[in-house]
Length: 87
Image: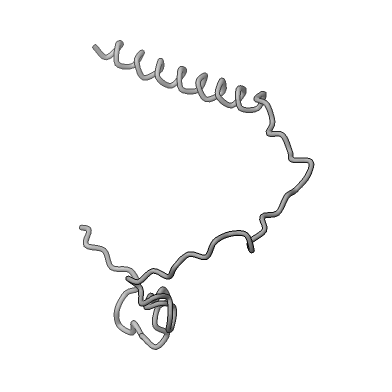
């Protein structure tokens, strides 16, 4: 049983290396994307305006009721920066 297990480990390692090399070779020899010859810009004046989202106070006020920044006056003196519940 030990010989079969060892042979299986070597087989997986060899097949993994050859698969990686084959994929790398296929990616390296694939067709390259065609670069556009003329860059076009979208006219933003022709786009319709969307109504404000009512769930976030209509987008008015200080950021529409969303606060993505952390308060600057908090101090974590005596407390670690990262606390996990792991063992």
